[in-house]
Image (cartoon, rainbow, N blue to C red; front, side, top):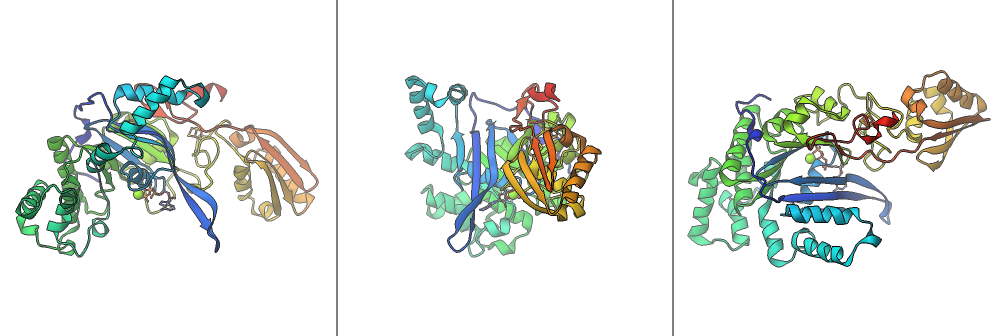
Length: 452
Ligand SMILES: Nc1ncnc2c1ncn2[C@@H]1O[C@H](COP(=O)(O)OP(=O)(O)OP(=O)(O)O)[C@@H](O)[C@H]1O
Ligand code: SF4
Ligand SMILES: [Mg+2]
């Protein structure tokens, strides 16, 4: 999109010796239930080990294709759903963050009594699922959310006066005439006014409804707001107005934002730093300038090539093979390897990749009768007859198999109607600093690159 607001996210920020939100290995796995007994058959790994900090006054942009876990992460941070693993801290000082990271790097059985006492104190004071009393209340009021769909997030039967005033009433901040005047002041801060107090949501345009949602989020004067696609449902000109409003409010109130969007143009405009998510993990993160001008991760490059709008309606992106894999069964190694145009032999090739490749030879795949899997990297494929197994061998030997997948094979053999293949096992590709706080999870740039 094009708007008249340039470089909103590039102003000097205070960092104040602490973060507002600190994520450490945050996970959210949703159970997949099956049958009359609702047996848990697996888990959707919506968020799968996310670590980063959000500093006071900054905007962290979160981008990625539909289903990569952006909203789920936003909901975990704002306390709407509990994470199933990892830890989320509120207002962690830099000193405590350093202590925490030291303790986390120490194996459980080697932690000293002093470390355990420090951990207990830090968790009690800052970890959102362990906060009590005053600290929990401070977190709840300081962490607010604005959703994409203002229509469903506003109660259709509630007057604007009641919607915007609700947090103030619940927190017993104001009542009667004082409450009304506080609501008027909030409405004025988002470009609405007293004349809108006694109207219902359906009596407003989309942009105005989003202003009401923002006013409600501001009611308790929070420090931090998760903005989940706040302008995606709006026309381009209205988008620009809302983005300008968010920027002005940030300046006036010293707000910190996590800005979720699939529109890279908007994210670039709004963000100081950006985290790119793929299948529940952060693939790359860095300043907005670094990420746009020198992306390191091939997935980020693909997103930028699809600029400005990652097509959120379809899972296909130009230049990438296939669709986003199932988050209940994510690929080994680098999660992006099934689609990566420059994948190497050490990116985590596995049995499923070989079976998917057989899918391009429909006649051979049709003969596949079973897969005996010893691990994701090691299996025996059984075919209806020896000719089909021999055809697989022929394809592998004659180079039809992608070169990097072939190089990842530790062994390959055929025996009658069976094909046994073993890939070199590879662990997950973790984020590493490639300079100046720019992190990427791609073996082309990280410590594993000497093995390519
Ligand atoms: N309550 C839930 N139960 C089960 N699975 C869920 C639930 N909420 C989300 N998921 C799954 O978790 C994954 C991540 O979903 P999420 O809504 O966080 O993605 P997103 O990045 O926000 O996508 P979009 O850009 O479409 O908004 C998806 O596979 C989704 O189907
Ligand atoms: S590690 Fe890098 S090269 Fe390998 S698949 Fe992932 S993004 Fe591609
Ligand atoms: Mg979402």
